[in-house]
Structures are given as structure tokens and as C-alpha cells.
Length: 553
Image (cartoon, rainbow, N blue to C red; front, side, top):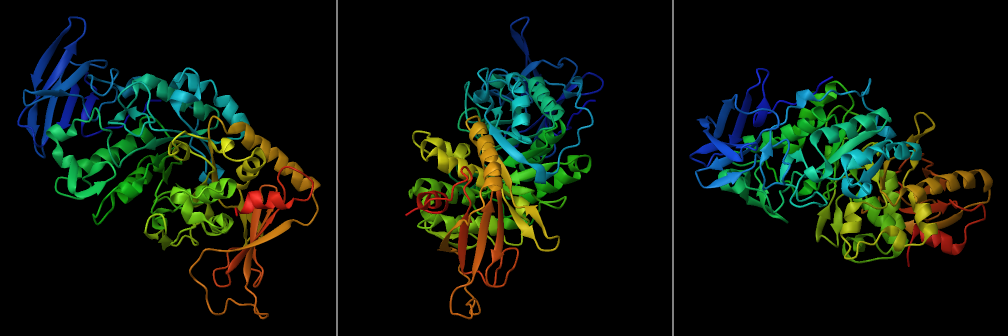
């Protein structure tokens, strides 16, 4: 089977063998196509025709799949194709014509997996194996499948300058970086993942371009705007004049990865830095296009990273919106509890991180409109009504390692006992009152390759402990950090009502000790009892063990 995504820009091999080239260059007066003749060491310049909307176009029989090309802007600057499918010599080099119809897919009857089965393993292609290539990653897929992972998420692979990069400085959004292999190599990786029953996701960056290799400013300055600014400077123009081609660029990028490469979903990096005051936000447009396109034929899942905790984007049970968000609140609370650190954003989760963790487990976000000390503003939207599968809880990912000056892992900052316990606690469930059965409360994530052994070991030990230990668990009480304290939320004895979170093995259930609600109790909730059953020993938990799991200080 063959899969290709048709785009209104870039190089496209047509059925008759000719190649169409199309570039949006609204500020250019002339654009030429420069075709390289590698066998002769020469190049050929072909003038392109201006068309409506600031596009320049050329259809020629002199190019074919494998041809190298550049665009020459106003007789002064040669640039790569911003929609290049391949740039073998880095972003400053020539682009390469790719015919996606040549690749023959063989992934059986794969149609995806439900989101509530997601156990996500985040990996960097360049460091996941000693080879650091798409093809070498294929060799470790059986290991991930045996571990219990059901989805892998590749950190960004859009073409960047140099041999190695996190990927968050990519500049050619449609071209897999050549240091990892060819486009066909990436397709083989996706195909192999599906044969092992694994979903595969890709991290994409739509909030900025990297500082080197981005030439859009030279011929399409309307791609950016001075009306909005981000940490990287001018914001991408999603809502101003001439923003339609810009929006199309990113909508098609999503469809390209889902259709042409058969990814099962995308993770959108730091969408809080996407500035858009349009009637329809670009995130809503992207999600709608994904569900209306490839989402009609198979399960696809689009996931956010959003520091704003904007719960209104999350619709995990609908064929619309976004399935989930990586839950930074859960990470920060877990990290603060494990390490006692109070610098940076961790200050928002002290002095009682267990209380914030409890709210994450019961309601999704810890911050749902409350004032953030670190950010000096209110943060978040109410999330208690959002299904629990909308939150990806994790103990470590690339951000939390890379944001540290020396890149320490959690295994070097907290004891092994604490790490094992918290690793198991990320995957939990709450009780469904309607069915009287447990329901999955979150997806979990593993940041590799240093995580698999602790994660698997924690699962085995917690399962064993739940069978062996029968002693009453230790109890600690903390106030939950919520601003709402209704007048009726006092018990008849004058004491506070509470939500009790009890952990048995890898399962956490919540009940209100006043009204016996089996789920999160909004009206009675004042404080939280955290009952911890040890995840690694049949002995009753010691005082120090309870402190390590639940709180600091």
C-alpha cells in the first residue's frame, strides 16, 4: 500500500513524471528554481511564475525523484525549500525531491490502539541506540514491547543544523533530519513499530523556528508578526494579515506526518507560546483537520504540552480536540516530594507537594485558576470534569533533565526506594460510581532509555506487596490546595471533611470521608488523607518511608 499527502507547496512528483515546485514568497519580485546536476557539477536555473496569493510555481520534466534543488530569490540569495521532504546536507544545503508513492507499506491491518492503552516511552533517536539512527532503533522495538510499553514518542526530528540536536531548533518542518537516516528509514521504523503492536508518536514544534537555517524572513516576512512575542522573539503569524498560508503550512504539516508517515499521533510542544487571537484558534483548526482526515480511517491521537493548563482543549473520548496533555503539575509535585527542591517552578508545589499531587490524581491539574507564585499570575482552568485519561503523568522527561545545568536524572537526585515507589504511583485509577469498577485515571509516560528497569521492577514489587502486605497503611493528612471552601464543608463534629486517597499496589482510589463519594468530592473537599501501602516491601511502612512518598519538610 502507498501513502502520500498532497500539499499546496513544496515539490510534488506528478503522475506524468513531471515535478511541480511551489513556494510562497510574497515579498519577492522574482524566484528561480536552481536544479543541481551532480553528474556534471553544474546547475540549471529555471524561472518560476508568479501566481495569486504570493506564490511562485513551476512544473518541469527536467526534475525527478532524487533531484537536488534550491530557490534563488531576487538574483541574490539561494535558499532551501521550507516544505522540503528531504535535505540531505542540512538546512543550508540543497533540498531533494522525494516521491512518497515509491514506498510500499507493509503494516498489516494496523488501525491504531485506543488511547486508554497508552504507556508512552519518550526517546531521542540519536541517543536511543549506539547507532543513533532510525534503522538501529528498530532493533530495540521488541525490548520495548516486552517491557509493557504500548507507544513510543520520538523527540522532534525536523531538520536542524549540525549532527545532533534535541530537535527543538528545527527549521525544515517536513524533512526528517538526515543524521538519523532517510525518509524511507523513518517509514521503516513506523512500520516496524506497528508490526510489534506499538503506536508511534512524533513531537512537533509549531511555536518557533530555530535560529540557523531559517530563511523565511528573506522572502516571506509575513510568516512572523511584531504584534505578538515569545521567548524566541517574533511570534509566528497565525492571526494577522496574510496568515492563511502560514496556518495552512502547519495544518498540512500535521496531516503530512499522520498520512504520509502513518504516525499514530503527534505531541505539540509548548502550545502556550502559540499566539492566536483568531475566531478559530490554530490548535482547534489543526485538531479538526486531523480528525476529519486520517482520523476517519484509524485511531489517531493528538496530545499537547501546555503550561497554561487550558483544559478546554482536552476531549479524550471524542473524535475532536486533543486526547490529552502532558501533566507538568503531576511531575512537579512528584519531583518536589522526592527531592525537596524548591527552586524555579517547584516553589509552586511547596511546602506540601503531596497535596498538589492528590489534586492531580483526583482532578487532573493542580493549578486550575489559582495564583502561581512562580509565574506571578493565575494559571489553569477547572479540570475536574475532564476525563482522567486526558492527563499524561510522568516522573521525568526531556524538559526536566534539560532544564538542569548538569542534566541530572531523578535517579541521581532521589533514593532508589523513592524512585521505585513514585514510578509505580504514576499509573493509577479512580473508582467509577456508576459501574462500581476502577477506571483508568491517567496515561503514563516513561522517559528512556534510563527508565525501563526501575519501572518494570516497581511494577513487580508493588504487585507482590499488594498480595503479601495486609497491615493497616500509614496515614498522613495535608490540606488540598484549592481556593474553594464552602461553608457546609465542616463535619458535624466541627472537623474538616476529606478526600482519602488509598494506594494498593499500583492502584489509587479516592473517597470522601464525610459523604462517602467514590470519586472526587468537590463540595466536601477540604483536606486529603494519603494512605500509602509500601510498593517494595511486605513490612509496614516506616515513618521515613511515608515522608519520602508523600511530602517533604
